[in-house]
Length: 146
Image 1 (tube, rainbow, N blue to C red):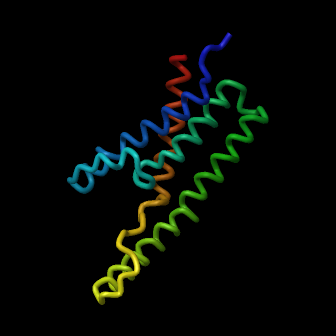
Image 2 (image 1 turned 180 degrees about the horizontal axis):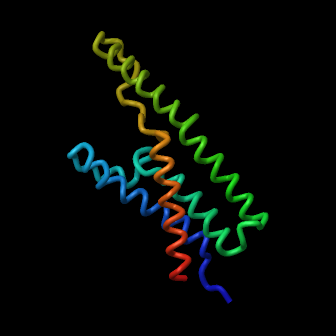
């Protein structure tokens, strides 16, 4: 009898680990401490990618890599990771341009918005790749413990 849902725990641990790792990675690159990254979207590594790859890996380890459930999880992972570098990243790029326009108009006393749009929405391909590798590693080692 199994008392723990291995794929669920692996996926949640993937999210948590990726989110926590964003802080020291950001600090190492920019020499600025930003603990708010723990609860933000975007950045290195991708927590979405870590979540879906740890989920798929854990399902594969538990139910077999030829199971239908693994196939569903793997396709879900690919779609999620593709979306992170595509649509969500483009939305972030649009936010950057819109924020510049808002700032320009506000300087001209045409106040159209007081708050900036969130710019860090999607991921660069390397952030998605690293998140994916992180998720696989987490599921593998968690599987050895469980």
